[in-house]
Each structure stands twice: as structure tokens, then as C-alpha cells.
Length: 71
Length: 164
Image (cartoon, rainbow over all chains, first blue to last red; front, side, top):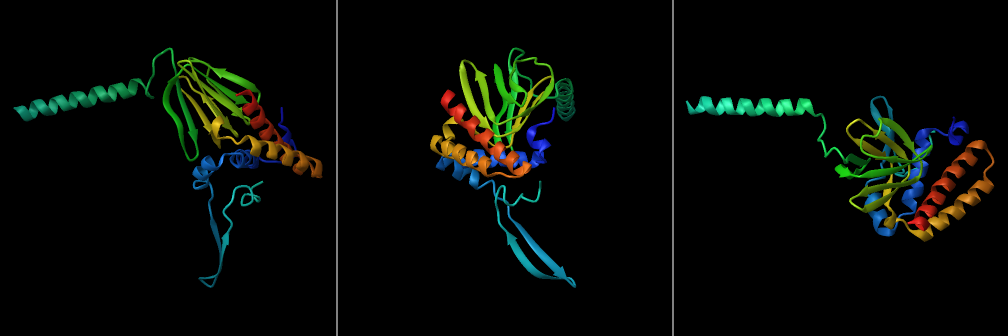
């Protein structure tokens, strides 16, 4: 018995994150402030050349947007 | 002489403590109560609580867990986890996760959870409207599925609030 989102190609990881984003977006202001501090993670992407970092890009801390690639 | 007695006493204490730990793997609660844990990635809602019953929104339907429930694993869908304890019912909306019923304890592990009082009714109504619009605008199967996921979550929150 396959769930509809699995059949459409959505992974469980993405399903979890979408539902969690929906719940977090529906929280009242105070509760949202408490969770907002815990949720975002930030990633820095740096390309290296000849043993030295050439560029450093700060990836946006976010929920679903940052995990777009993890489908 | 006293040093020998003290070391013997401490050895006995260590033995009984170790024996006690070997006999019970988890902190036991009274036999007629459910040993309940409720975990989130960022914190704990309940730990080693002795409750009467827990209702979880499994993907196959609402499931009630009483003490001595058969071991099982249930995948959760967006819905309400109700913790019944001594006449009080604590209700939390969970986004997704798993409920693990072990022989001696029950763990509910949710990705995101909030007491119903923390949900904003107008934000939920707005979310339902936005999700319906996304459903109408979706073209590919995956877009439709993702819109459906959002719609399911928001409608579950809406019914949780109206039934509270």
C-alpha cells in the first residue's frame, strides 16, 4: 500500500520537511520565536583551488528551500 | 578494619545496583500505567511519564495505546497526539514522525509538534486557502503531491482546532 506522495516521487525526507514547515508556519508568534531559534541551519559552500579557498558562499538558512535538493 | 567494612559495603551496594540495572533495562512505572516518552528533534515534551492512554494519528488511522499494548511501529500522519493521564487530556499537533510501542515503554518521536493552544486559527485558514490554490496551479505529479501534502497538513490542523 504505497502512499500517494511516495508514488508521485516525493521522498519521506521531503514529506517530513513539508509537513513540519506547514505546522511551523501556523504557530502563534510566541511559539514561532521559540522554534525559529532552533530550526535554521546554515551551510557555507566554498570552492578550493590549489589548496586555497577561492570563493565562499553562505547558503540561505531555511526549511524547505535549503532542502530542495534532498528530494 | 573500618576501611575493610566500608569497601565491603560499597561493593555490596555496587552489586545490588548493577543487579537492579540488569533486571530492568528502563525506568519502570507502575504496571497499570503506560511508560511514555514524547521526543522532538530539538527537545523533549514528555520523558518517563506514567500515563493512562495515548492516542496517536497513525497513517492507517487513529491508534490508541494502552499499557501492555503489543509492540508495534506506527508511522504518523499530520494529526493530534492525545495524552490521557489522570482525567486530563493533553493534545499536541504533530506534523509527522513515528510511534514505537516497546514491551516496557512507548516512544512518540515527532518532527514538529505543538500544543493545540499554540496553533493560530487564522494562519491555518490562510494555509488551507494557499494550499488549495497551489493544488489548482500544480501541473506535474510531484507538484500535485507536494500541494496535497500541504493541504492535508493544514486541513488536519483546522479540524484539530475545531474539534478541540
